[in-house]
Length: 195
Image 1 (cartoon, helix red, strand yellow):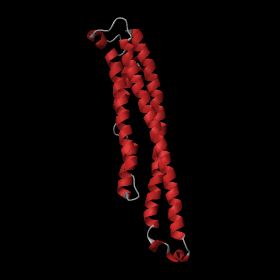
Image 2 (cartoon, rainbow, N blue to C red):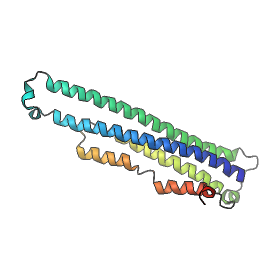
Image 3 (cartoon, rainbow, N blue to C red):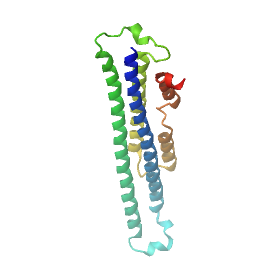
Image 4 (tube, helix red, strand yellow):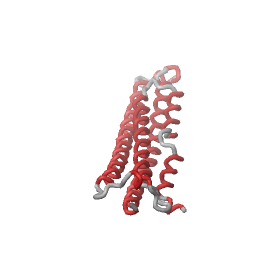
């Protein structure tokens, strides 16, 4: 069983790499979202001619400004879609690590009993802990990816400042990935490295 636990720990090291990449992507998405939000708020002002003052005399000024802002917004929306695709890649990688973890047990010539699945060897985690942790981490990230996709899909030119602010907080908070729970999972798996 100790050999299997060590194999699971290797999988968790790859999970940690994926989670580091996730954090980088989240920073990028927040920046892209902030830029897109600024453009949406700016366009709401630019659509009102009263803010142009003497510039209303310049032919095509309003149309030109709105056109440039729209181009920038489309660029940020495409960038966010690309970032979401990278998030999806991480979710798929975490799912594969979980499935590979399940296959590790199925590939054993002698299948562990329920008691062996729950057994701990010293401070090492049980096989159940290893599998459950992989499943939980995948589900957290999958749920968060779905939330992020929904938020990005909900953005429109009619989004209010309050909506954009609430969306930004949700993206930043990542409510589906409770940090304490993830830390607890890693503490269980790498107990011998912590103590």
